[in-house]
Amino acid sequence: MSTETPFDPGLQPERTYLAWQRTVLALAVACAVSVRFTADRFGVPAIVLGIGGIGLALAAYIATYRGYRRTHRALTDTAQLHGRGAWRLALLAASTLFLGGLAVLFLWGNIRIPL
Image 1: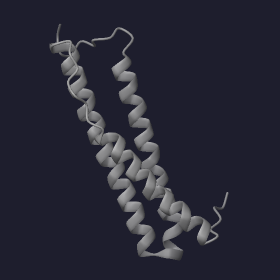
Image 2 (image 1 turned 135 degrees about the vertical axis):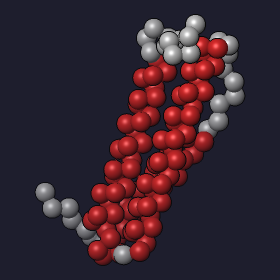
Image 3 (image 1 turned 90 degrees about the vertical axis):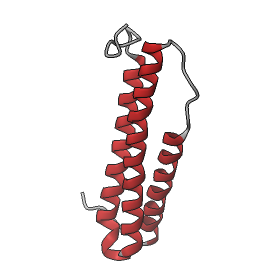
Image 4 (image 1 turned 180 degrees about the vertical axis):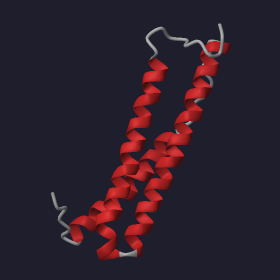
């Protein structure tokens, strides 16, 4: 089987990879938007939390891509999965904590988003 041919006709690994991409992208956008509304009032702490959250989301994106490629190779080459790390979950959790810090700033600063 070619390494570029999908292992699963239902494309389960590909769908999982796309779901991870959407989740990480949504988290990065939420961090960026949060910084936009909190930076005026809180300055450096808001910017640090936002950049940290975006950076961790980017790291989770890279870990997701590498995990997908590793899984794809394992499925197409040897039909065995090797040990999988939890780095992308840890990065996603850390980025979510940074977003939570920004949410606290929203509440503490009584910031209203104009609609």
